[in-house]
Image (cartoon, rainbow, N blue to C red):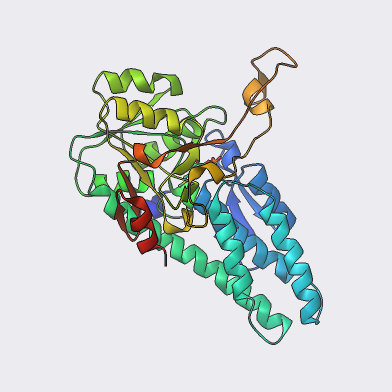
Length: 348
Ligand code: MRU
């Protein structure tokens, strides 16, 4: 797995007084890195999806908060804490669905321990690095566990992008696929293009191609056709938030795939680190769903494809009920029904 991380460009890199990110909105046309030197630009990079994917959002927000803290010029601890809270609020307002962001903010709040402002600033940088390290290790571990569910010769369908770009680690769904390949299994992947922002076509296809894993790109509407033909052995997707009962919020279209998988007796797996689990929500109905700019639907890469002024809906995520999920793959184990007990056991 380590060689895999070296093979690909690092999507997130902390360089002491700045954060370097790979601008995912330009991939695969252009591989360009952006150096972000203030927290407002880091928050904008999340909103504009230069960096995206639940675990990566959590990591980048941690570095953003640490960088925001560096910029607070005061020796008063009280004033520092008030201004730090404003920085955290800016990040909390970036994207609502991925719970990793809110877990990061909670952790950063708890990490503000020390007598002097310089000490607090150091503690925040240390915590951000720690969060990143833990997420890398979590995705490495869950990839190994996920690989056990993949048999030699499998064709796996995946949706959106749940690879190294989305996690700043090894990936979740794609991590499991990569680990299976490293075990010597022959694997094929079907990647859905994932309208409206095409994370499947632009990012998943790009990552798999670099990893040398055979990938076939399909439009979202082709999934049922291939499942019905018996071409798909399992579906593996990532997640943005998993409720206490195992309901899963993930990229819009995931629910459709889960229903199709059940209808065609195909296992439907969700791979996610425990930082994506939200035990505070009893079920998926309470997960906030991000509604994004209508232009993402009416345009493709800036080119208009619909009549001017047309009514548009653009929910970025949907919720898949737990009874459609065959297993949730985490770094602490592969959890199956009853999810309430299993998830509670691993999130302590
Ligand atoms: O809107 P995005 O691109 O941030 O959505 C990403 C997804 O839905 C991913 O599938 C999810 O975050 C899992 S990433 C390991």
